[in-house]
Image (tube, rainbow, N blue to C red):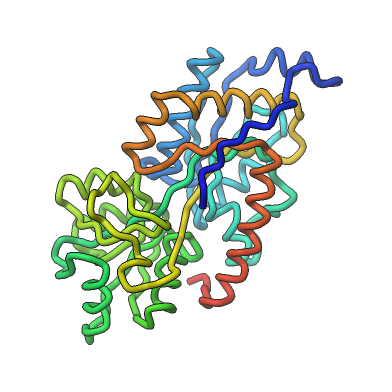
Length: 322
């Protein structure tokens, strides 16, 4: 998935019917809902962008961590809030594009209940194991899994999360088996992975890279279409025995349906500016994620495409809520 780097012209503060609202916004703190526990990628993105909005506008950005049901609880809370621009949510591919196909009722419709603001970040996942797992690369890991009578286990951010679907897709394509251990966030998986309670995880890079560099975890591959410069010599899953395999995560800022267009334009403009600054580029590079800004319409189109894609994948791999 290529980084989106398009800023659509035409957004301005002179849109009829919303001038005063947009010019005065914000006049009070902005609540940014993070639908996962503190310490994960969504949390890091929310806090980083929230801090920058506070610096730019002089109004506090309050991070509200509301985890549960693979991110759906926090997202549902956000979209049921007044569409006044003072409640936003850090939405990622899981709760925004996947959960609707996993759970009977997530409390929102991904194609109707959001006001999209902008895409913010894209990133591959990274496959990591506890150092006790005797595999130095992904080819060796697949051979190990096939040779073991007792099954290795993998952790995920919950049933239907992209970390879960990535592992299930790998199992399907490589014809291997692993035991699924679901968690309520990537930070929680990482703790148990370091402790040796989990063997392997398809993880967000931002969460595990510090532990890879410190030697507490071993990286085997990345799930994107190309290697990452953050871990020199680390190949992709596709080039290590699973041709065609690719999984890319994304995050964006959304609000409840019905937000004022001038306020959306103001948020889009400021967040796009922030995402292009050298400071943010350097911070996010360390985390292994790429800034990716877009117009609201482009983000809406991406969500529609991803909802359809993951609905097919969920059906194919037979994901069930545990």
